[in-house]
Image (tube, rainbow, N blue to C red; front, side, top):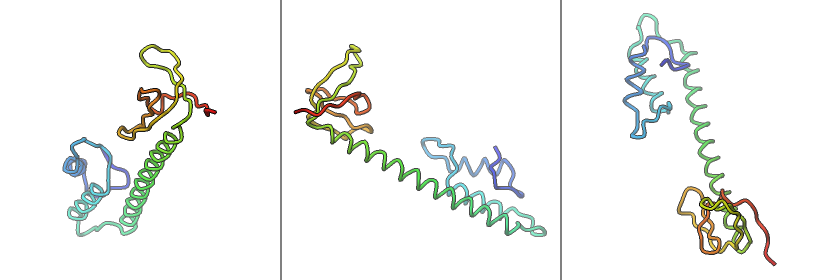
Length: 144
């Protein structure tokens, strides 16, 4: 599998070896900065001394690495913001009447939210003693 932006004397076997060396236990196939740097170092080691790598090409690759790192940082920040928004939304339900569809019976159930738990990736709201995932709640009504 060729990688865009990396050319020269690095062949597919070298790319595959660098990718295999960096695979984590989750077997992620994404290219991160560590893999990029390994490929760049391998490329520099194996280049022909009579025709060295073009500096414009190297700068272009470093720019791509910087852009990739920024996108990764932005994705992480966006995920953290979404998680925080879910927590705030769940906390705001306490004391309100909420509706949800019971997964077992398929019936619509309405009850008062009394507590929130953040133990799972999706917050759970306790409605009349039963824990309900935040994303299952379909309606909210302020109690008087």
